[in-house]
Amino acid sequence: MTIGESVTSPRPVSPSKRPTPRWHRAKLLLAPLFGLSLVLHGLVLLAPAPSPQPIPKAEDAIAEDEFVDLLSIGTLNTPEPEAAPTPSAAAPSPLAPASPSTQPIAPPPAPTPALAEPVSSISPPSSEPAAEPAPATAVVPNEAVAEIFTRLTRGSGDSDFDSTETSFPAIAYLIPQGIATWSPQEQACFFTQINADTYSTQPSVVSLRYLTRNVQFIEEQDIPRTFPAPQYAVNRVADGYCNRPLFEVFQEEQPYLFISLVGIGVGAPGQQASGLVIIWASDPRSR
Image (cartoon, rainbow, N blue to C red; front, side, top):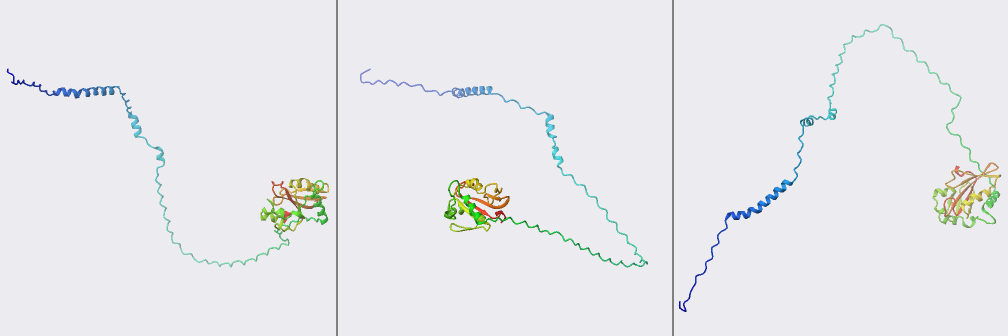
């Protein structure tokens, strides 16, 4: 072969690709499905089977069908018995006409005059109750009243607790828990009128004193010292008067006078810092 000649060699030809057979593709699809089916069958075999339901017996089914509520039988409305027809009243037979009587009719007897009731000479007792005797009124001379208050208002030694001239009614009326705080009914128990300047007592009041002394000491010390035994006897009335202590004083076993002890000012009942001593000529409860 000479130089210059081109030698062309033939190109190698690659073999043509053959198509994949169908059975090979089916094998690729069925292999995982087959493995999955094996797993599912294994799970089904391992799962516990439910217990079978008991078959009801024939006797039980018949008993349930034949059950009757006996309680409902008693509530059934029983038909009321029909009322028997009342026999019709027999028609009255016509009466025969009465024949006139031939006997003479006797005249009616004359009325007898009523007897007059005897008038009783005894008059009926009167229904009005007998009047109660008026309460005894004590007659206390002015000199005796002055002496009573002198003994009452002086404690041990020369102490004088009488503040009537300087503090009544102004101080007793205006202090905390004083007379101004009383209700009108309470004020009317002892006074017909009272304010910080003037006052007027009930008619049966003989006199009064305003003492700047503890009420407990007045009751336990001053009143017994003022009316010593055996000439006097002091009895405390159980219910009191207007929710205040009331004492009845006897002189030689005779009613003498009544005393009201009225606490004024701050303090528990029966222990106020000052008190009003009121002398009554008669029982104030009978007003």
